[in-house]
Length: 333
Image (cartoon, rainbow, N blue to C red; front, side, top):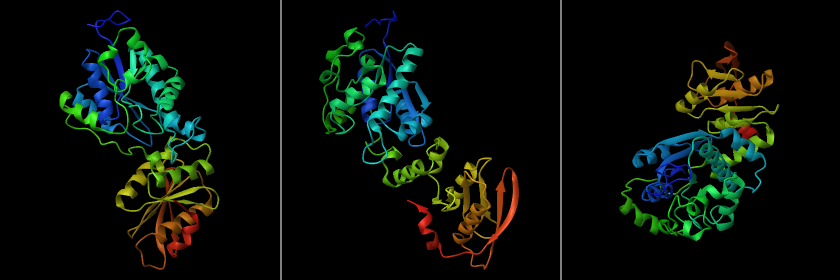
């Protein structure tokens, strides 16, 4: 059995888990050498840990979940290595995740960090230079092992120290998934997420909303990013934003998201949207929100009655519906 540098019987690895096949295989390759593996996944307004939880359950390993929304919001303002096709700062985001994993490694006495990254699988974020940049910028370069491509990369401390046997690690390279799929039978992996988007920062429509948000609200926080996933968005003349529900489910989510400082406008006696106004208490903005609410309702009435909720109190307002295309100049995305 491989002895650890800390005198334990088994080496302990903290492996970043997405739920995709690569990260599951990375765990299995390490377990095959007798390494004790725990998983780590992350949540933010742009991705969740749902698939990671399913993957960890299949592997029967512990999964730790950390939230990094505020850290990514700061990163999005000026990512050192720029963006991908959309608002995805993949290299800097990966470095952030590895950094957080390294901090947890040191705090909880793990011996090293592992990921399922494969050399050349993604042309921009997993080429050799990008992998080296992520490791260096994380601050834990020597402790980051990529089991699936390790034999193609420089030896890491866990290999040099004998915590893992480099010869039993793999040398997978390129975009073909055939080597990984061939390993599923060997390791008994029956369920895994296909490699696909997953992160909203790669979505063109969401990225357009996010870009507009950061342009108009430089101090936008994690909650502001979460609200981007709801309804139709309109930028009001004052610079405030109104979010208009699309359907019943959307309305319910908008009402649940309303904070103490927000203003909520809701149709009373006719089917219609919930309208949330954030970062304002201006009367003109409330009137515009009421106009949006009336115009996107299903009412054929001359005037629509609505409730206004703010600071725990409820008021009343009326508005006459207008053609929806009159709001096109205010609409975001």
